[in-house]
Amino acid sequence: MARCRTCSSSLFLFVLVFVFLSSVNLSIRECAAEIGSGDGGHTEVFDEDKDGDVVVLGADNFTEFVKTNPYVLVEFYAPWCAHCQSLAPEWASAASILKGDVPLAKVDATVHAELAKEFGVQSYPTILFFIDGVPKRYTGERARYGT
Image 1 (cartoon, rainbow, N blue to C red):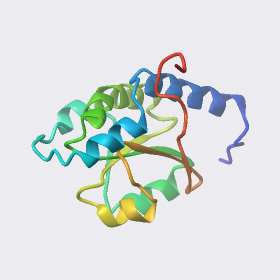
Image 2: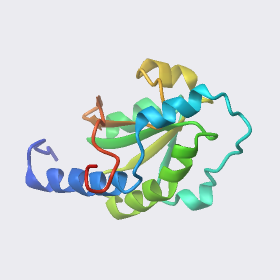
Image 3: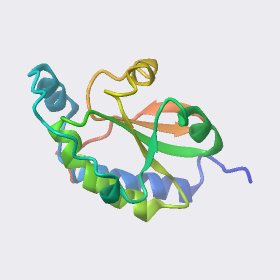
């Protein structure tokens, strides 16, 4: 079934996802500064049981997944990134709410560095919105009310 990119239901879903992402109240610059600190002492926090409906993607399943789903939101993360850790529960919650409409996925960019490089990931978390397999960088606010 063909879906119109401008239909109101798709817009509604995108806005719903924006609200969840905005509640994290983070900036990409803050995360980039953290990356530069070289703090490698953090441990993996993305427990698969806590991720619920978030689809875990890697080099082996990424292309197939974004090609077979008309809309996909993908988070490229680093396990040690505190901002990624803060985003994880919100991302999982949004994935559960949007299940069946817009899948939310994640890629561990430290494990799948070539995939992250392919999409120009330079800081964490980086969120891309794929529409018919074509990525668009999420550049919206990270504060609930846009502050």
